[in-house]
Image (tube, rainbow, N blue to C red):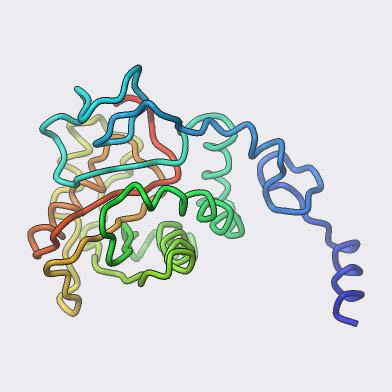
Length: 230
């Protein structure tokens, strides 16, 4: 009976791809998925940027970041950029599971992850959007890796939208924007910090500084996508 009901509902409310709009068995159709600009080796071993040859650190991340390693599923362009935009701003929460399925394969690139956490949104943004996309991703990835997902950070400042700022302005904009939740103990732990897009790295690096100062042993970063250069 349940199978018949599901079939009837599928006919009444068929699923459409959230990127291109075609009817699909999933919220992301195979054609759109195949069009994503996935990041393949060689890359910078530190920040995950695509390179001509594998390097320990590239000129863009050398002596810049406090986190140890960053990885991203793909480049922030084309249909992947559109999918992330729909996920964040058009309530396409079903994409979180699809992104997490693919991102989970990258967790093995990090050493000794003990806890998964995420970049918090301001209360104003989260209330307006209805959810925190980084939190959804972190929960999905934690379920697939049998790790614990926990909120370790709080955002205490309502900064200007990072997309409107230069690299120098982004660094200044996030300074002091985060604090560690005093109820959470991160001492000696190796953390994996989840966010949606690595643009200049300013936000995840500020989070890393705060967590390391609170005693975390190691910080790694995992995002859906990254901007190729900044």
